[in-house]
Amino acid sequence: MRLRQQILDLIMAPYEPIAQWFYDRSRPSRVKVFPGQVKFGEKVALVLLFQPKGVAGSVDLLCKRLIESSYSPFLVSNTDLSDMDLARLRSISSGVMIRPNFGYDFGGYRDGVWYLCERNVHPERLILMNDSVWYPAKIQDEFIELMEALSGHFCGALMAEDRRSRRNSGRGRAVFLSSFWLMFDRVALESSALQAFWKNYRCSNSKRQTIRRGERGLSARMVRAGFQPMAVFDRRSLDQMIDDLPDAAVFDVLKQLALVDEELCCRRIRLESTYDGSTTWLKSAREFLTCATDGQNFLSTAPLLCLSSQRVAYIKKSRDVQNSEALRVLGAALDSGKLQLSSVVAQEISAVANR
Image (cartoon, rainbow, N blue to C red):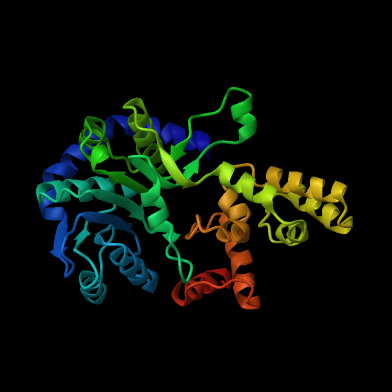
């Protein structure tokens, strides 16, 4: 499948500049913007939506949380909206843009940034985020404030990286900020690096190319310009949580992992069957927790452990195999009362987990 996608990307690559030229030429007629009831302030959150089956209630929750933190939500929908959804979103935002799904989330980010510049909206802080996560997932959180407290000009919710085994062997790729939530201050927003990125960005309807040029490309461009990406949570944060686990909690955390790999499942069963609380067992269990979560999907592998940190206040919505197992684990924890989330998010997760 990967080889097939790479071949398709090569075939389509010469046509992408033409497609973008035609899209930009027709943008005035294809992109519609509806003003909202929230005034633009010094902080703006550009939120990308793709909800073709109707806008979920969790979007209202997100906008209200952003407004509480003094952010003006500007919503970009990559699909048509019903009249009812549009009216609802306009009442809780500074505006709603409806556009074709050209270029995935970075295509929407690009159009949103273009619109803000055209309207002379130049915020002190700008959030770029998409609806691939539920936020706020918890009843109370200080996640936005934690991100604002970071000392960097270019920040994000999560630092993504390849397996440490690859990095240790010298074949690892550079770390990058996950594009589901990015934050820029005025210094970054006014930098020639960021402005050049948007000016030269080439949209693609290939998800692989969007990740390469958009998510990874943006971090690479900012790093080359001297900006040090900073994240609220990363792999090292989880390592520290595992090291700091009370001995009495290790067994429960082991049982709560969302595992799909058959070998890892077998190893967990063996560990559970030999549990005796000894120093030797605890050492083996901690080593297994580190091994099992050693990958880009560590949030989905240890969902309950990650959510216990105030630095993780969101839940990924992806329906891939790994995250589907994570949602099943979270759904079971909600049903048993072991996990407390905001009621709207809890209902949406339970609906997905019980399908």
